[in-house]
Image 1 (cartoon, rainbow, N blue to C red):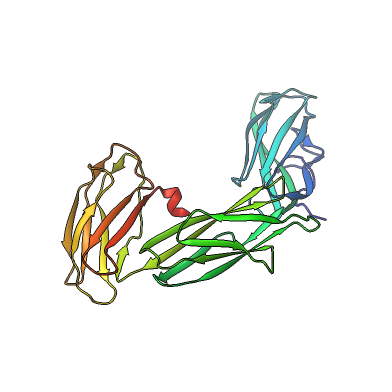
Image 2 (image 1 turned 120 degrees about the vertical axis):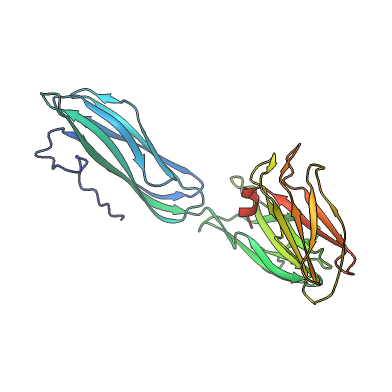
Length: 326
């Protein structure tokens, strides 16, 4: 049983006995029990004005982004009631959920002097994953170009449910994926050397016989190293129309070998660059402020060098949301 800190639905500063506003919720907390964490829980709290003066609701809010509440009526006449519509979005959440909702309201006495007060409501319950993927993403980290590495992902349903994986695919040619024949609830993802230098991204698409969840998407990322280190590995663009300050790409040899940049290929002719040496074993490429003709998220800068094994280095452009997925 979940305990609530709320004892009554009267105003925060006064007891039910001496509350002049008498703005009361008879059932100020709602326990929804266990709930599938793919769903949204909704509940209507009924509040009643037991006073002899109108009550004006000035604001209803929750301190959590996953929870929200709205009121049906702004002004509640004496003896009337209204509903506070509250909801909690459980998507991706797990375990005990306790969310409070705060109803700010104003009353006036016979002399029309306003008094501000607060009514607190609460929803309690437990978010239970219908299906669990562990881990939810795969990060191989830094790999040599000839590295053959396997990672395993477990997929399980809520106790009592008997669903299974039926097929798996992956969106990257540098990676392979399969269902473990000995453990059919496990997915194996592997690198496929030789790996091209730079960031490798892919999404595992796992198909299931669960009609409520026919497919799962699991992101995979790896960084394939070569003799030349490129920093940053990708360029984040805050706007699809360009950037107002210079961006820089640094290149240096991990093994101390000297090399030259042969060419730089950019996805938009508006992107201008300058190549500057950094000592005898590196370079810095400056991309000057640019106003672009189209969105280049997903496009790449290709830097070609004369160093064997590092002939072409790729730096993708990503949106801020894409960068956060790493």
